[in-house]
Image (cartoon, rainbow, N blue to C red; front, side, top):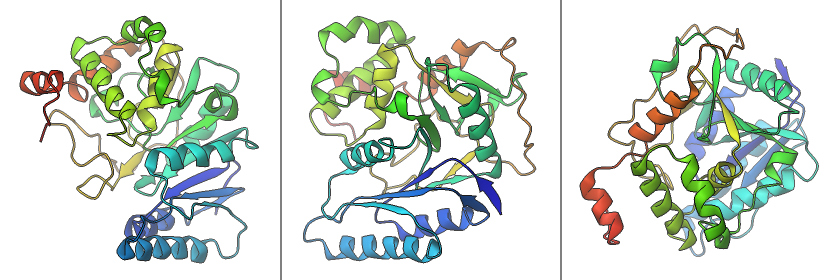
Length: 304
């Protein structure tokens, strides 16, 4: 087995099929510490209660010979609150950790990449996290193994205790006047700005249960960055109607699918990389919406 000396955090809920695939994917690895965050079932929902119990049973069976820390909630807190409170518990004592949600299947290279990047940027406070996903195949042969981006991706990632604990997840601070200029100055596209401002307002009004947007927002205004590999190291199997937030992929979203025979070698070069172009591609292909939808956003009309 491949030994991983970095604590791993698994975030599961009511998808035993996804959780089973993730656990199968992790069989070849031996983790020194394992934390499992699980939200409680929805009130008076027998099917949800059954699925949550089944998912937790899979965890128990997989780690039956290993001591793990179970951060299980008896009540349903919701995606945002459960992940935030769960990771708060993890980072009370752990200086760093790898985080995987139940639908994020990592490659072996993912752990190698994360390990090297956590070590390399441990003292560089402008780096907030290490991400394992890259959605664009166009960045595979750019002369470097990774890049910096102001856009965070939660599909398999890692961070340090001091970075996580500095994030303010208080909704009342979102888009506060004192942060407006800092926020706007970090967005390179007015269409992306429109998207972000509207999305953050939805979070403030509890219409979107997302912790990741807030995490990204506070890194924006603090001018922090995220490390992105030049090729995708995570296979997300959870996109669909049962997903909490990602029901479908955006129209112009060019997902960089996993390839076989990946190299385990990462050469760290920055000299030939234009990082701004990657962020522009994110803004144009992920955060770009049609004129019709932007008008609907403006007037608060529901977008189907």
